[in-house]
Image 1 (tube, helix red, strand yellow):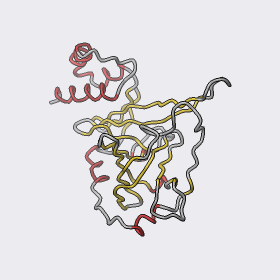
Image 2 (cartoon, rainbow, N blue to C red; image 1 turned 90 degrees about the vertical axis):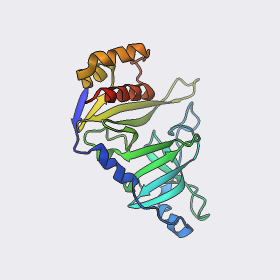
Image 3 (cartoon, rainbow, N blue to C red; image 1 turned 45 degrees about the vertical axis):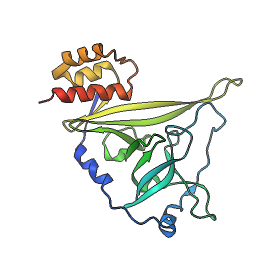
Length: 228
């Protein structure tokens, strides 16, 4: 279990999403169109480099201090690039790489209308520098974030190459950022209620060898119910 100290409180995350909406007109969105053209790589492979599916999603983008509503984005996890699809200006390329250093945060809306919140990894100390943004899964007494990354494996000549997703789970508790990589990590971080957590895992038949976000979230919420 790796523990990192961070001075960022979960409560501060609210400020990233409280920016005032600005008008959505042609000239306003033109400010986003000055990135370089996005060129996909390793496209003829098994899988794809993107978050969720290989499709365009609606999103709210907080960029260089401004908020852009209902833009069309794809998040390339392999290259760690945020890709804007635009049809505002026919003289510009359709797919544009946003300047990732100017992206304050973004909220991606999936096909089921679920909102996925992404924050820059620079907001946290000692996170993997190869991961540019982390997804905020849950925020209460404990915060739960996930760093998402895809790798690419070149297989034998007769086989197609393949993308693999590798996620890193972190929780923030008592201003400590903790990497959760095994059942032992879960029991160590929740040591004051270790027996209760063990019973909860066993009773709910949760498999810990491959930690799923949904299962870890259930454990976190259960632990919160035990906190004073």
